[in-house]
Amino acid sequence: MDSAEQAYGEKRVRALLIEPLLARGLTKPKGFTKQADFEVMVAKVLCPKLAYMTELSLAALEEEVAANPKGKGRDQMMIPNEILERAAKIQPPAAEASPLMRAVFAAALGRDAMAGNWGPELLRFLRKNRAWPSALNIQGIKAESELALRRVEDIRQRQASGRLVSEADQKWFASRNAAQRKCEEIRELVSGGTAC
Image 1 (cartoon, helix red, strand yellow):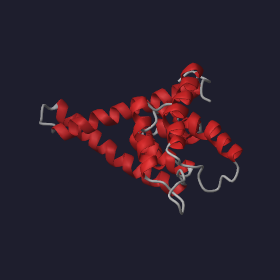
Image 2 (spheres, helix red, strand yellow; image 1 turned 135 degrees about the vertical axis):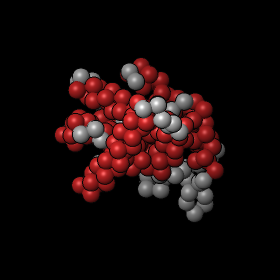
Image 3 (cartoon, rainbow, N blue to C red; image 1 turned 90 degrees about the vertical axis):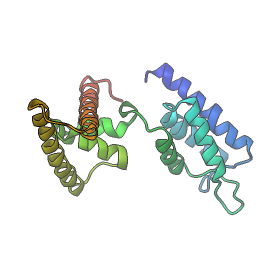
C-alpha cells in the first residue's frame, strides 16, 4: 500500500467506522479520559491499522462494534485492541500490511524459516497469534513443518507415480505452495529495503 492509498484508507476508516459510531451516540472507550487522547488514538492507531479494509468490511466492523457497546451504560466503544481483533476476523490484513510479519521475516528467525522450509508454518502462526513466537512456539512450528514436509513429499510421490491424490490433499498442497510464495514475497519486500 503506497502513501496515497494509506491516506485514502485512513479517511475511509474515519468516515465509515469512527464517525458512524460517534453518530450512534457511542463515546470514547474506557481509559480515555480526555477527548484529545481518544483523537490521537484514532489518528495514530485505528485509522492507520485499519486503512487496508474495504468499505464493506468497515461497514461490517461498524455494525459489530455498535452492536456490542461497553461500559455501565452500554454507551462506550470497545477498546482499540478489541476493535483490531474483530477487524482481523472480518478481513485479515494482507501480509504486507503487518509490520510484525515484516519484522519477523527480516530477522534471523525469518531467514532460518525460509532456509529450513518452515516459512509457511511460521506465517500461519503469525496470522493466527499476532505475536513474536517464543522458543516453545518455534519448536511447535518446526514440528508442524516436519509433518507438512512429509505430506508434501507423499503428495509429490503419488503425483509422480500417477496414483490418486485426493481433492483435499490437492487443496492443501496448493495452499501451502501459496503460503510459501507469500513468504518469499515478504522476504523480498523486507530485503529490498521497502519495509516500513
